[in-house]
Image 1 (cartoon, rainbow over the protein chains, first blue to last red):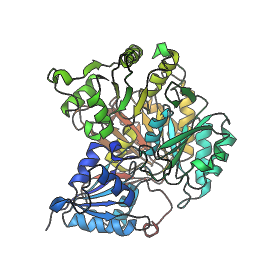
Image 2: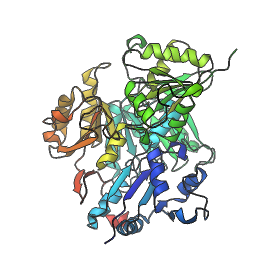
Image 3: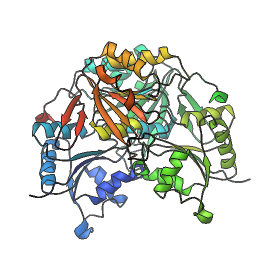
Image 4: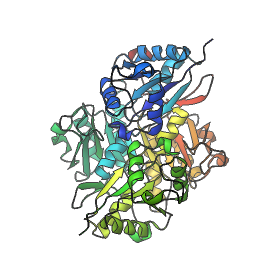
Length: 270
Length: 270
């Protein structure tokens, strides 16, 4: 009987591998098989985490292209590889728990009775954190994330969450904004003032290497104006951060920032 | 006139530097001055990000001990150092935006008219993500973070957020649990079923090097039983994740995991 390897579900952060953790790099570098989308493969080769194609010699991991709609087959294949003794790194952008691949892996392991397969989740910087850092300190109070994808659940559920978060004063970060974003902004406007600052961000941490043709960028607007920024909502690389009544825009000689203070205190009381 | 350096506010992730990003390591390694608590200094020396004390030679950055209550003085000192041309790395655990130092730095820069000081926030893996990874996939649906510290705001505000998040079905991650945690659990119980799984986690990613004497650990319990786990709520290293009605406990031959599926779908439909 062969000893099992481990199935690693690895988050590489929001952008280029500079925002990947050292643990994630170590796991990918040491894996026998790496499952990753074309975009992430490209990032990992640029950085040297994966060797240039065909030049890695015998130590080169087998690299398998991951694509939407193939997740079930690839996860089953990963279980088999782990049983054959391989370490498999299944690569997610951002953090694998935040709209990534980790729930699928456990759901499938349960459905397939794959209780023998060791699984380790390697966390990463999710887009909310990477995008917030690019914009300054817009997330420095309680926050929530809401996915706008209604593929697997009704819009009612999404709407209830948006409304509750807006009323109770969470900073709200919207994921999967390529559809439904105007509808979501409309609901938030019913519950929160039109002048609260909003940041629309694309390809945080990716420089010019992301999906958005304009490269890493953010636009500061307001909740009242956000729905008029359709040209900034690029697709899978876009998230939108909606501030609270405490969020402010602040400019220094270099940049414009969004800042949400933790509230209620003077500087001298820190 | 000297050219300014940059003030970096750097998140090193929830645990040992293995969970720090490569960008964070690069910034700390290249800084002229590093401001960090004793615990984080220790982590950074273990990993080689900072040289062993006194052995770094001329390239050794000046290391300044950060402590609660000194944040204002240290931030002012950092502004001065940056004006003198130094790169300063102010180290936060986790992510600097999530109950870290980034809002303070901007609030102080505003109060002191320090508009000349370049500021860059370097994101990190926050405890919610690091802890969730340790427990499996408990965060794989919309989630929120709520700090239980009422030092800077009324409990009413915290209570409203907890209630809204519980009713509208967010996974809830509680930070700063060293006080008020039983009160928070009591409010969540009024709105959410007693049998939803709860994970109490300590020192995610820290192995035996954290604040908690038992080392990195998590306890799986339920909302109804959570308040009876006072011995697991260790202090600043503790966070608590409260699942939804969809969160399940799953065991394989190696570990017990918490899994929150994104909801409503069969495996074959992924």
